[in-house]
Image (cartoon, rainbow, N blue to C red; front, side, top):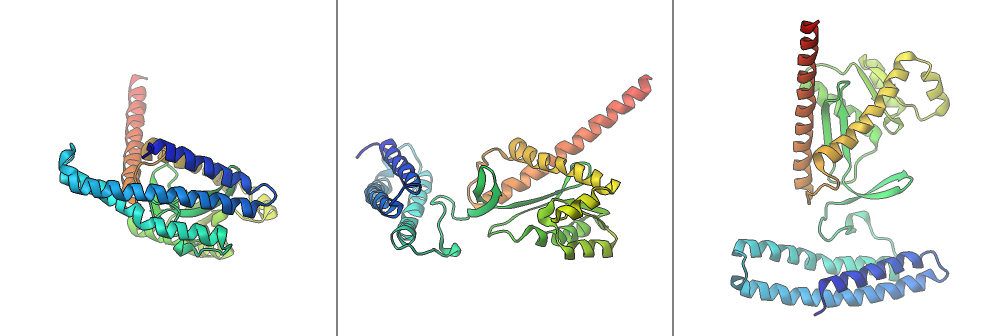
Length: 286
């Protein structure tokens, strides 16, 4: 058996060849040829994995692992082996057969089946893979609501009121003002906010309407404040969740996010306390 690194190098080379073939003439034939090579090497790796799985199951006592530790490895191998036939069929349908695969049948990762396609439409990040997270903070930077979606997330505009209802139930009163980017805007949301007595600072999608509203002092101030929320998300990801997040599986990511938000909010509140003590000290010294 060759070393695992040689298999990885070979598959990485074929993956790059597959990507480059899409930009050349006769791309369909080239991609089919590359896929057939991939399937052949996947079959070789699959056979090796089965033999090693049987050997570990039978001779685990000769290793330095306990039976429980060996079973963790066995379950991981079984998980990949069980998904491989579906992954090969998916690739065959898409590239050889030229037929689309339904979203609920797609396998995006052999190691994390809860990963979803996230279309961002941004430069350098047209499409990403993971789970969408909704984050809401108050004016002081405390995260007051968050949600991670196991399945594909609904449109941003459909998440506004469920979040506001949750916050109202948690704190016992309505939010006085709401500011978001244009993805959360809808005419129905704006009207509902006005009817509830909440100041509407949702960013309009229409550029002309946005220019008109930016003439309002309060609206302009809140839209400038919105930039802090973008920084807050970056801080949460890099400072409290890790980049990339190490948790695998949706349940573990959901738990890691909960702990990350709690730690972040405690950190923010602790800073308030330190700043208050410093102000008191300066006033006393003066």
